[in-house]
Length: 539
Image (tube, rainbow, N blue to C red; front, side, top):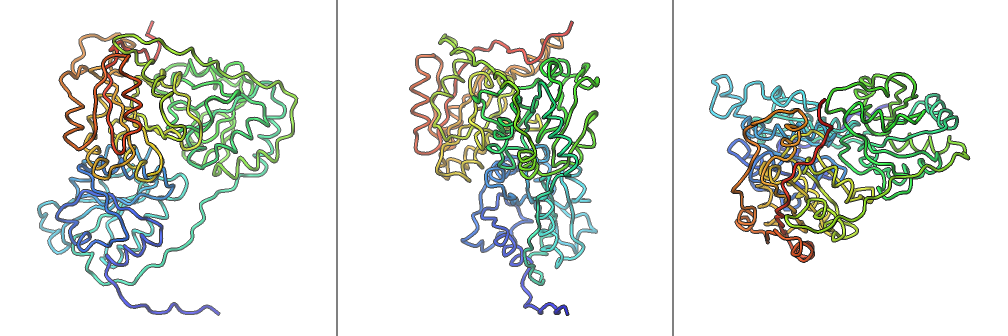
């Protein structure tokens, strides 16, 4: 016989929400306040840390980095529709990163909404769509805590992602019933028959390849991925544009990074009779071309927790499951094999010093100088191929970048990472163009004296766009040069230690000093402005 729920004493919407956050293990709220948020922020409790960012895109980026590091949803409070608008670029990135966020924004009082008041948002819940998994402005004030609870559960379900709740200013003081946090499971087990078919295909394969994506690192399953790869004796590639490190890049089976060009990716995998994609789409391309990998001569399997990614896969068999239980089952099902262990990639020799500083020399020097447990957050897309050559990542929780291609994530994400992991050094490697999108995040880091070192690669322009202009054979493109930005003065003005390096001989001492600094340091490195080619030229 079921018992009727006990009637509880009414509390305010604000109190019910704060109690929910505590129950969900949310210890920080990221925000940039405005008038429509003041009732929520008034008399703020001591046990929940309010992290102030100076612009909403930075606020979302910080929450994203923090959520990725803690593997719990980041909670964000933005200022009305205008604040959501400022934040949309990094909301899109959080969507592509599959980062769990619960985003709230203020709304004007319900009583004056029909009058279209100043700062109100018309159809507020529609504004961030389609890049949030759930979006609502509750019909009644007393429904706000339940909406926030639902937003949390949805954000944390695989594939994770941001959610949104619009809250009118007068709702926070309204009485409601408290909401108890519930336990909602998040693991999705794989289909046993499909996994047996995959294990049989791996056993029969002569030249299998595993393609690992960011889902493996998100699941905390990198060590398990290594055990599967070693038992399968398969070569291991990184999926195109992987935003995390899901396999140790100095492992003897590590083959390298797949290109986002259909033809170049197909060439790299062309000798393999079986390709198993784990925790990634099949495949993320950036330019058009013929993908012969889909012509039918190569068997393709995919393991993903993203049903949409499985649905758009053009060829092969997709297994929808969360990564850890799928890998555990695969490890158990795989028989021992006598296949020859594949040879991994050969690391390039150390680059030589020169002036102006070659970017390859900078990256190798930074890799050598970083503490062994440091986390690298990167947003220097034009230099990623060089970084992949000269900065091998160790594996689990060692690397993070944006999955969207939109700039403005890296610097605030590094701040969020440093907030989550105060005992280790976070390093942000960022281009001069990228840095200016969310430069305000430096202030938050400096105020909190975070263990963060920012290395700005200054080539005086948008290097990726210079490269694409060469590949596409277009000339006289405006807006690619960025002269006259002094990152040292900007950083010092926000309270950071900062230095500029223009000569190779000064690089190692500057890196050592910056990485050992007690607090936030910025190192601006003036590099050779020669354009690296990201893709082969046309024709």
